[in-house]
Amino acid sequence: MAIRFPIRAGLAAGALALAGAAAQAAEVNLYTHREPGLIKPILDQFTAETGIKVNVVFAASGLAERIQSEGERGPADLLLSVDVSTLTQAVALGITQPIVTPALAQAVPVPLRAADGSWVGVSMRARVIYASKDRVKDAALSYEDLADPRFKGRLCTRPGTHAYNTGLVAAAIAHMGADKAETWLKGLRANLAKKPAGGDRDVAKDIAAGTCDIGVANTYYYGLMQKDPNQKAWADAVRVILPKFKDGGTHVNISGLVLTKTAKNKAEALKLAEWLVGKRAQEAYSAKNFEYPVVSKVAVEPIIDGFGKLAIDSVPLDTIAKNRKAASELVEKVGYDLGPQS
Ligand SMILES: [Fe+2]
Image (cartoon, rainbow, N blue to C red):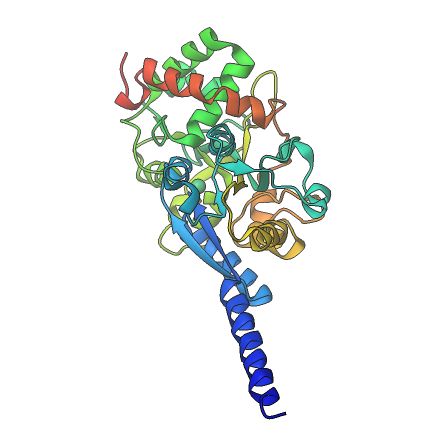
């Protein structure tokens, strides 16, 4: 009897210590190329609901390579990208494991997740035209129209090497073939008002300032600018046109996830993945981030819905990913980022 107490006390203390360790382990390490400000409110909501802390490492590029170089000891559980190519690149580097659960399979349609379970999309965006309300009167335009000489000296875009633009060029290659895509991209370069620089919001800013009349940008930035008092005037200067390829639809891409092969918090990582495609997160992506939900039950935000009905291009995301290298090489070959030349 004399020793029973200490043993039981010891067991209780041990159990508490284990519980403490379990509580401490309720975290997930997320590496992301997304702007932290865009996902923090959503991740905070996840933590508030589940008690699972999300440690975020942000970098503009290179995170798949970083995970590879960190190897076995690396902390990353998940990589959240801003395009599909980064996800397939991570898969090709051998740093991932399937991200598959019944809930993910049920929520996200196959074109927006890999059929083999290697990656899953959590939000969708379209790459569209921002046109000056005052100086561009066209009601509709195609991607091909951006190369029309009537826009000479009037086009602004961010650098061609950015993933958003290589994705678009990859789609152009799929539609036109490499030769015609090269002619098209040269046409865009010849139409540039200045050397490609900045981000998508700068396209609207430059149009508002009269530096250019037309540009290419992602849909959600328009909504974000509308809600920012310092940027609203930029958004107000532009009209968003959902362009199509002449033989296709509007180019879309995803923000999506891969699960690392070395994930030490796999259960928490899968919980976060499932939560991100759940109703509340999808509503937040739509209402706060102005993105298109990847699940059908959630409505598109009214400002974004106001652009018109999105007719998603027929080129699958895995083709976009496969053409990424050719697209990057084409951007280099035509000297797109060197700016206007003729
Ligand atoms: Fe973005």
